Image (cartoon, helix red, strand yellow):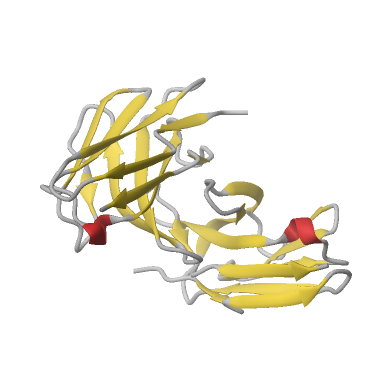
Length: 116
Length: 113
């Protein structure tokens, strides 16, 4: 089946630094990628939707200047958490789907971010 | 905004018991998916239901899509410790070109040995 690779799986960084998370579709072209944030034992909260070659659409309350999303190719999207603070510590998950309104969604394995 | 409410939010049962998780909305969905997620991993798709009234079985798991395509249920028979995890329902909108899923609030299931 289709595979989405997310890297790194975990990262620890100091307050004020920036962290980049990569999401790659390994065997299909991901025209749309989604980024989520998840707190322990809670559901996924959609942060933004990115379409290849265009600017990401952010959900209400998500700061686009803090969470930079780049989807420059059909197989790679990146999420950069800029000037990270301890409250940004969370589990970040990406998902990807190919063209077609009913194409299935494939999830990465998530990235555990801890800001000290 | 389309919302999906799951119940119960938390469920702890003994191995061998049966359970049902519900996913309800006031909105109509073109399809609904169920996922299971284990700690530190991404959600894994269990099933997609598309037709109102549809019932799908996956070994000990039975999924049902409501006739009006607004709700769904997941029934597990003779639960095993390996069933422990966060269960998420997710609906695809019935109108418009949006291709993002609406996720339910989640049900954390713990099956005790």
